[in-house]
Length: 136
Image (cartoon, rainbow, N blue to C red; front, side):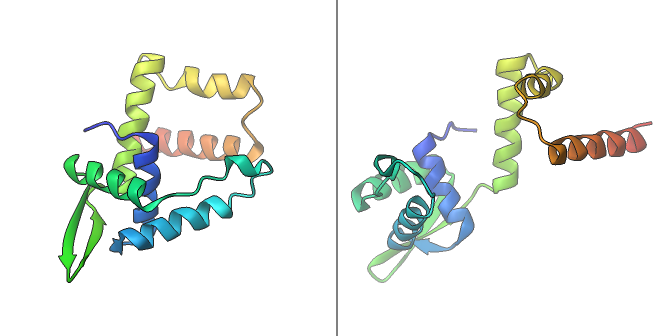
């Protein structure tokens, strides 16, 4: 799978939320998300500009992450990558690169930094229990 930059991912995520969509729809979604982020530091609020988003859309088309259809004078974009498939592939890649393919050091790192809450631990226990039932 072709690598997708952080900015490209933000555009793709906006498209996953509402597709098919025009560039203007995507720009509006991105700017709404930036304004709704609740950031205390207003300098962190990112205004997405038309030229930037269109450049990112063109890159995503070239990477075959999205497709487009011309309708009159507008291009309408749709994702070719499913969010779940992309997320799984990126997660596997991260674990391979950073933790030699082992998940335990990643979870242990979060646990040591007190980044796991009770809901996380409950979800992990449930996943382990289900795995044990299905792989016995």
